[in-house]
Image 1 (cartoon, helix red, strand yellow):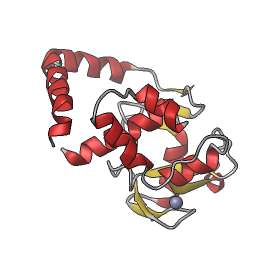
Image 2: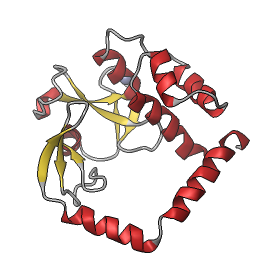
Image 3: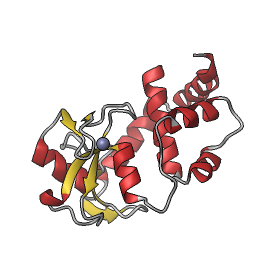
Image 4: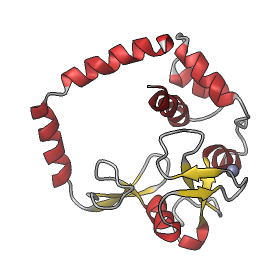
Length: 178
Ligand SMILES: [Zn+2]
């Protein structure tokens, strides 16, 4: 627990900065955001102004996740590649469900092209040129980050993965520890 103390202090400071007024203003801005479509930095199609679908987050809904969810339904499923049990928005890196594109085309969101996948299976399959995440890497990444001195960017470079992937590994772990 103590290794996360610094993060707790940081989060408490962040929480304090968010007054109810500020939160309400941001919420109103988001709700007013036009319904539309955009492409993320990583090449995924995202629907905006979405507040009804269970996978919508702050008004944004990744189209591939929506299509797969509507195809297979909520709850727990098996990874298409290794059969591991995974769950939509489980909040835990080790059980989180990714929507995986069989043909690796991030914009081909045909239901037949999408399967549920464990994060590491999805990552290793679609990033063959990078070093692969292996058993224990996630624990190592969390430990190095928790011990301080390593930024997410440096960890991303060391493991040959994106900073977003590092953030996901670290933050999901943090959620289940606290
Ligand atoms: Zn798998």
